[in-house]
Each structure stands twice: as structure tokens, then as C-alpha cells.
Length: 224
Length: 224
DNA sequence: ACAAAAGTGTTGACTTTACACCCATGG
DNA sequence: CCATGGGTGTAAAGTCAACACTTTTGT
Image 1: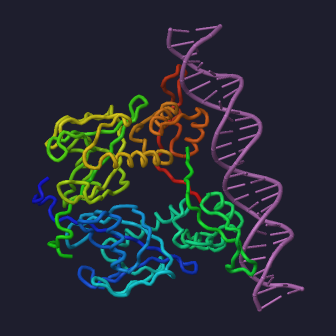
Image 2: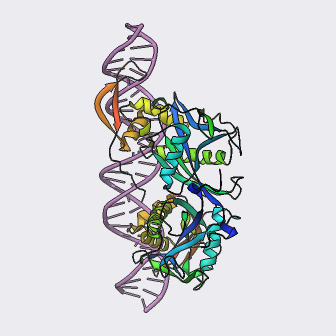
Image 3: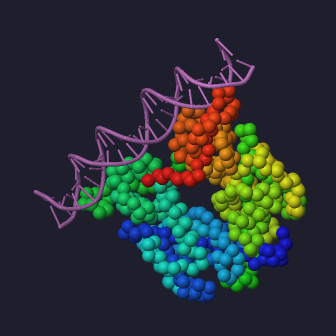
């Protein structure tokens, strides 16, 4: 392959992450505001150009750190976006990730070189986003929803102990759906993701609730 | 973003597809042999560099056409690979796809500009592959297996009518697992992917078998 | 008439769903 | 002592896995 061929000259790779949290029953996503052209002043998902000396996952995490100050976040790649005109500057494809984090445990930076502000937005009050980030965010949400029903992706929100009513609220917020208290408990326990800690704590009720925690190892169940 | 910054100069994008078929109960993948360095003489999956004037899916299809002559193939993006050293020439990320096609319906080209030969390989007799294509192929297979249990991805192998014993053999070949005849039938019909054509045909038995076909519209079922 | 593969039905185990009742605590 | 949410149980409907018998044809 010839580097000089105009057919594939000046290409680049974005690594973009939709970082979600849930606060008081509301699903939110972290956005940053661009300081420079293109899309100056617009909100976008965290991300930026991949460097030559880093793998995709590392690049995505570096960008998260640079734009928000967040470290120690687990991310999961879900799709790559590559419409010809998705960036007005040059030909870029965007490798997109989702991440989940407890917003109360992180202090988000307000000012970086390329972005001013960084803030959590309720997913049903999203402003217009720059680049193709609205499309990316929409697909990120679909992916997030598909993941929480069978994986321990919510572990980031509940790294330690939690009660079932508490985590149920989070499921309901993300899936935008209500569940029967008793059936939810049975189903969740059946997924084999969490275990009883034999301790109790408080959530909303006056009666103490049992505390659970995510298991160390998880196994997935199969169709067929 | 400055195009000249060495941190992200000279990057490129590969679009790679693992094309599968099933012949007489054996799952096979289409490989081509490289004519030029790097990896001259090695077998690899079909693919190549994305052009600036095409979307990702189009690029993947163009590469398939150029390397094998195959047109009219449905492909599905499943993951992007981006280890720093995955290509010795320059920094490339590979957007990977899977596709399924009936090998008996296509005539695969044997000679192109960059590749000589193009042939079907049983997935348990894969030669060493160039670049990181062994890793891509391994993940492609996992993805393929996850897809056939709930989608109409096998439609490409059975575009028209087929019998249940016939398609069962294909499922068994891909999943490398045997199923009970009666339960397989019930489960498959329950997936709501196929419908009775009210016609009959022959497969292996002497008794005529009912002919089915994939439905036009498919709906997916949910957990939670 | 029989071998060989195709089609159908039943049963028991397990899940899922929809409910109703008791429990522990703070006020 | 009672309101509030937390915990548990049960019955009906549905799914899943294992298995046996009948049907249609070619020879």
C-alpha cells in the first residue's frame, strides 16, 4: 500500500466514549463543550484522535482522562462509525465505546485545552451535538440497554454493597420501564451476577434491606 | 486537529470481512493469498484499505468484490481491531465484518492485483494467517455463532425454500453441536424467523419434507 | 415389507408472571 | 401504632428437554 495514494491519504481515527451514569433515577451522559472549530461551542461526547503509539482502548481512556479527568473507567467498544463526511476536517472513522461510572465518585474537569465545561446531561434532554455524535449516542444507549440485562456492566455504579430495590431503580432508569418488585428480585438473582453479603443496609424504606454485591466471576447463559 | 502532528500522522483504515459458507456440514471461510509484501505468500481474510470517498460498509463490499468477484453480499460489522503494531507498514485500524454466502452460487476469482488464489478453508484447517487475521477470524466465528441463534443471517445460505432437517445440519455445522430433531424444529419455528410454504421437497430422507422460507420481516425478542 | 428419514405429541422440570401477605423500622 | 417500603410464597401459564411413536417414500 502506497501512503501517498490520494484514495487513502489523510485519514485518521477518533476514539469516542459515551459515559453514562444514573443519578436519582435519571440516566445521564457526560458531554463536553468544544472550544475550537469545527463545531465550536457545540456539545459532544468525550473523545478525540487516536495516537500512533497507543491501542484503541488506551486511546479512548486517554481521551477520557484528558477531557474529563476521569481515570479507572471500564469501557466497551460497540461500533465504528465511518460516514464519508462525518468530520469536516479530514476523513475520520470513529471507534465508539460506552462506559458507566458513578458520577458522585468522580470530579469532572471543567476546562481542558480543546473543551470548556464537562457536564452530565439527562438522556432525554440532550442538546444538539457536534459531528455525528447524536447518532453515536443513540446507538450507545441501545447497546447499554442490551448489556445491563445480562452482564455486570452496572458494577461501576455499585462497586461495593447495594440493595435490590436500589439497583432496581437503576435498571428502571436505564431501560425506562417498571418492574414488579418480587419478580425483579428473582430474575436478577437468577442471572447469577450478584450474591448476598449477609449484611443489611438502608435504601428508601424504613426496614433494613439486604445488601448484595456483584460476584467476582460471571458466567453467561446460552440460547441453543 | 493538525494533520501534520506526528502523533497521528500516516494513519489508515482497513475494512476486513470474514466470509463464511457451509458445504456438506462443514463450515468454511474464504481466504485469499497475498502476492506482495508484507506477508507475501500468506493467506488472509478478504479486505484492504478504505478509500476516502466511500463509507465503511461500501468499502468492505468493494474490497470483497475486488478480491473475490463476489457481489450482493450482506455484511455485518462486529468489531474494530487496532493494536499499534497490527500492520508493519503504517498505523492501521481494521474495521471487521462477517458475511455469509452460498459458495455454490458464487464463482470466486482466482487472481487479482494484490492476491493470487481465493479459496474456501474449513474452519478447523486454517493455515497461519497474515497480519492479525487469526485473531479477527476467531472473533468473527464467535460473532457468527451468536448471530445464527436469533437472526436471519443464514438467509444467505437459504435464499429460497429449504427443509428443517437441511437447515438443522447447517446450525450443527456452525455451532459444532448436535440437536434433537423434534426440539430443534420447535425452537426454530418459535424464533419466528421462518414460515411454512405449504410445499414439500426432498432432503436426505425418502419421505418428502416440508419446505420453509425466511420471513420478510423479523422481530427480535427481549429479556427483561 | 422394510429401512430411513420426516413429522407429531406427551411428560416432567423449570421459568415466568401476576398477585397477597407478613415484617421491621422511623416517626 | 401505623405508614412505608422490604422480604417471601404461591398458583397459572408458558418454555424447555427428553423421549416414542406414526408417516411417507424408494428399494
